[in-house]
Length: 176
Image (cartoon, rainbow, N blue to C red; front, top):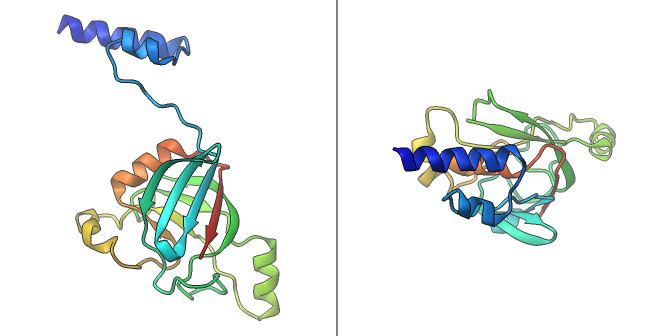
C-alpha cells in the first residue's frame, strides 16, 4: 500500500508541475504516457477507416461505420450519406443518444448554397459518435455494417480514446 501511495504521489507531483518527460514517469513508477496532439482526423469512406494524425504521422487508426448510403458527398437531409470535404470538429456532446459524440461542422457555406440551389435542406447534426445507448454490446456486429444516418461510428471504447486524443477545433478531412 505504501509503495502504491508513493507512486501515485510522485505521478501527481509530476503532473502538477507540468513535467511530462518520460523520465519523470519512470521515476514515478509509471509507464511512459504518450502526450500526442492530434492535428488532423482523416476519414477514408471507401476503406471504412479513420486515421488520427499528428504532424503528418499516424497516431491511431479505427475501423468505422458510416451512413447507410455512404458513397458520394451528402446532398440533402435524409440521404444517409456522410459528407465529404474539409470540416472542423466543433463541439463535444456528452449527452448523446449514441454514447458520446463530437460534432462535425457540416453544413458549411458551400453545402448550404448547393442545397438551396437544388431546393432541398442540406441536413446536419453529423457526428463522430459511439454506439446507440444500451446497445453497445452489439458493436462487434454493428461495426461491420453501415448503419448511421450519415455519421461516423466507433465502438464506445474507441470513442473514449478519440475524445481524449482529439480537441475541439481539430480539422477532419473526409473523402471517398
